[in-house]
Image (cartoon, rainbow, N blue to C red; front, side, top):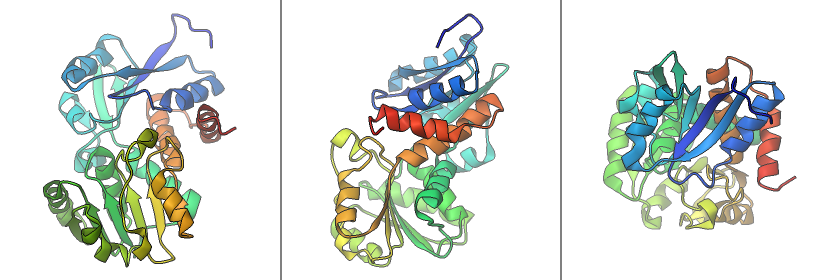
Length: 286
């Protein structure tokens, strides 16, 4: 890629950002369509978020991706927030439109697109258990609820946070919503009837930590999903496969949520297959 003075800059703000594959997938997409845009990772700590958001205007950036731990806190630095992102209470994509910063959330839609594509699963009439109550979890929770499931349980290490999220979302949807802690004995009653278990936390990222869920009680029809994509097969997914359960990795969510962001920034149709291949190359799977 030969960079000239005509190039625009897009970026990802997070802490950490070393694990992200977003530069690989977006730069491959920009190059494939011949767009003069470059995508860069910036490590932004909690104390630097305000200044980093202001830099989008100051540097006339095209936009940014927002990742952990900023998806909720970034809201207060925006000029406008998309209706869905406002209801979710978190953003992962910011578009700079002539100096106005507009926030969107593409996580949940990208997740559902990937889940359906990879496993055929749709939420309607199903029982779902979601682990985590952070920014990515909020978006997945919202879009799962939009798909009219039978029930959704939100489980979190801090049960107070899970209860707060359940209370916030319950009135918006005609769905049975409950909260749970993460202890195996707390999860067990919900998992025995679950059609989908989602790890929407960073547990297992870069091989650090693992979700201790009692997979032995899941029914044979259940799908076990993990939004972590590095490694692609987390310990959770390996254990699920050993039980003969269908699994879903986080790589597809990364690509599909990124593709939606790409289209918001550029107005062009995202080359999804190019982005998938770039992600696989970055993970040395091809």
